[in-house]
Length: 258
Image (cartoon, rainbow, N blue to C red):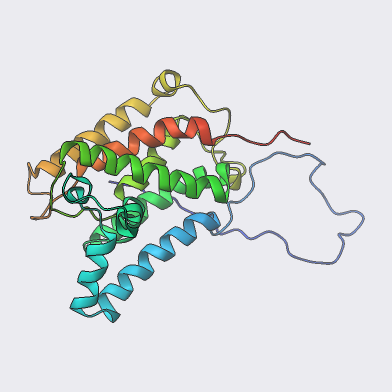
């Protein structure tokens, strides 16, 4: 479902002594491909993964049943909380559209979400920086629960997991045609942000998104027993994807170079 990227093992010369006068040196401004750093993750992605893993560790190893139920009731997303007769303007109502992204059903659920976040979130984060990366997470999470609520208004079943927010990074990545800067991995996606139609016209982008949607639909409907009895909120995934696809047009605002 997702491919892991290899990292170059070559290490740059860290000798602090100046090179000998006759040593060969690359010409100034040489733009040849450089070895990728061992860890190509932006700090914002590391922080998001750490929070998700930390919360799940606490739930499975530290919290008792009563405390875990309190956490789910107050921080998972319940569509019924926004229905007439149940709506209250309190902290769970305000925070749950985002805090549900840090709660996961099991380790497999968490692992899949973190793998997708690392794969698509890293180049987006290097492009956007800390603040806009976290803003994309929040906006995509809200878009995910908005579509989920529209389709399941008044439902009592809680929505858990980072899938909707992570899908927003996939949608954002599609607007660059999935074109990462391979020479300088920490520059993120290369080139200008593409328009919605232009990005879908890039080789491989539309087929990838359609296959991704089909997998989500098949898993959510449990057509082939892929869900293992669990309920997959594929609608929230699509809501996050579409939100990230359009939100990146507002968030990708690089400061002019000096």
